Length: 157
Image (cartoon, rainbow, N blue to C red; front, top):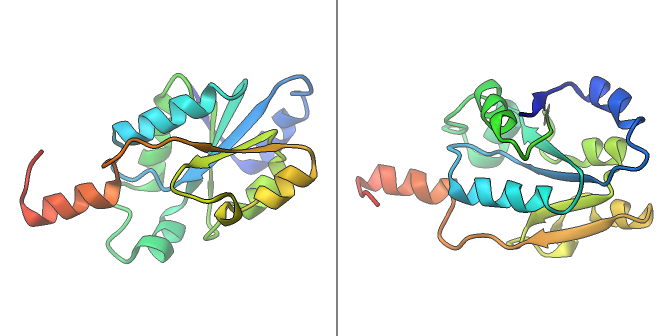
């Protein structure tokens, strides 16, 4: 089981991981579904430590609109930390995880395959310090926005 942690504490712990391959991914992770689970599980397979950057409620609202997130940041963080393949969850208020990425300095930056490398925030920086950027294959037809649309339409799976 993972841990919900502050950036300050995470950076203290990070200093001890000299021989560990650190993987970082991020997202809103609202209404967690199997697509999220598969993405995170695949991210963990890339290294030793998986850190998930989680958009705060404020950040999620900026990106998704006033009716999102549906699940609070505290609850989303707790759910993510409960997965055996997630080691740490750290939230951020900014629209992007750029600050987290540059402070944590992961060995691998992982995002879903719906992003092109040039669209991945922090990719240039991770490559500059010798890290790797990986696009993880997503499951088709799995998205929180799609689930919300189906709920609004009254349709079921």
